[in-house]
Length: 294
Image 1 (cartoon, rainbow, N blue to C red):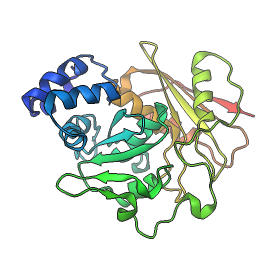
Image 2 (cartoon, rainbow, N blue to C red):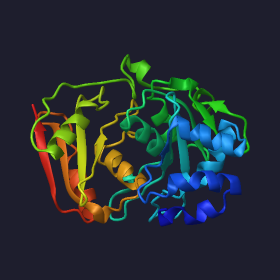
Image 3 (spheres, one colour):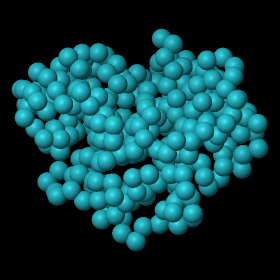
Image 4 (cartoon, rainbow, N blue to C red):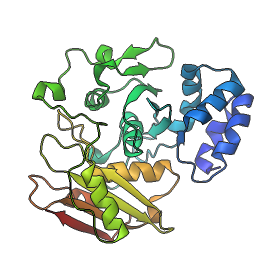
């Protein structure tokens, strides 16, 4: 079990500890539970889905990287597939505050980058901030997405974001988590292919600047992030943050990053290059390259 889980795990009920222990045995537990694993945990504990999600929140929060705030937030996004995806807030010392990933963004992008098609709910241990409410409004689940908070009755995103402004106001038809493919030819070495594939999956209907980042770890594993724009612009999630989020959630550290590669359009109206390089340098990665897409 990864050391980050020790304290949270010790605070769980005994029957839940027993059922979870085999799943957490892998140092690189991927911070997600299959539908079958969720069913096993429910059977072992007698918990319904909402109660189980609340019980697991301390494990999600244990994945947080809070070098600046020291305030851990955990979230669990439940996919319509039945898979549950952990998320946690992540801060990057030496980078700007704008590079921070909020817990809800972490769980949602985790689900999206794993191939989930839509979400049914998000469970979080603190009330979503306005930034996250706006980010969630980009999803194809829309304002009907259920938000679960400890000690409160479930509400929809529409309850937390009344009179919302979102992609439909701008006549955007393809929403975040809908299937997308920008059609760039996938070629080159494996890291380049991974970055281009991530760029192809980008959600970038406002600037038409798809981009993807691939991070190669020292053991050869590759983590990818796709660009996710937002109708309000500022809650947009850069591709690097998506990749770093998956890397962190899988129990790897920044020192494990050997190389990074960004794929983006050569003629795009905005570029991820400078921010990507600056953030990776702050994290100790000096080997960043770029593929320009035509």
